[in-house]
Amino acid sequence: MSRPVSGKASFVLAITGILLFIVLPWLVAENLGVREVILPSLKSVFKTAYELVASNELPKATLVSLARVNLGFVLAVVTAVPLGIFLGRHKVLFTAAEPIIESFRFVVAFAWIPLAILWFGTSESGKIFIIWYAGFFVMLLPAISAVRGVNPDLIKAARTLGATDIVLFRKVVLPAIMPELIVAMRVAFGICWVSILAAELVASRSGLGYMLADARELLRTDVIVVGMVAIGVIGATYNWLFGLLARRTAHL
Image (cartoon, rainbow, N blue to C red; front, side, top):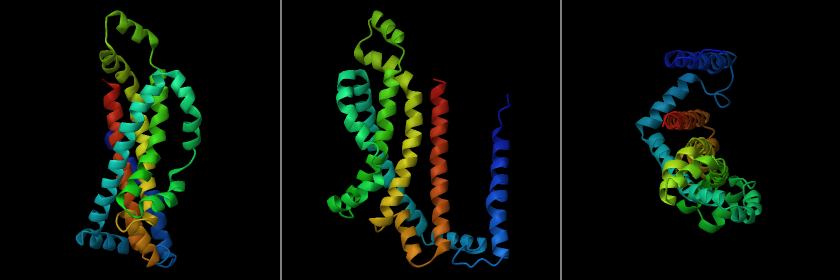
């Protein structure tokens, strides 16, 4: 069995990977004479990043997108988890709802964008709807599965000790399902993040997605690269936070 890698070693390996697989090939492409409109130079990307931050364009676009995705994600969690727990504990209702759930979960959020534009125009409601839909089914099914997977012996033991439904949920069911819910939240946020950027590309006048769409029209590949880096860094940061939460939850 391989030994776990320390935090410092992980950081060094990550930096090495970036240098070898991103920076080095990029520099080689520059020296081969690839045009700026195809692949901007590292120098121009850093310069553009500084200008976008100094002008507050990048921070503003980032905050707008984060506000949208956080709201839509929270709505997905607070609607999907309770419903999933309820359906997981009532098999008859789940059997009745399963065909609807299975049908809708295969319709990707991107397919709803044209209807969202027709229903909500370019208002915030349409974007929040897209994010909510993207995360809802990703959270719903794991919540159902997690509740069904709770050890029945634990429930019987709690009942024997006189636990009420509320106490049973707080002391037995919730701790048992929390690790699986955290994993589902981790996946759901990634899908929500991708979905809001797609929605902003076609139905927005603000946010990172709009900034990328505008840069595409102007052939500003340097702005596109800066936006892509921002998107990746934000996604990786949230993924790290959810991973930290999962590890903390596992020790409860």
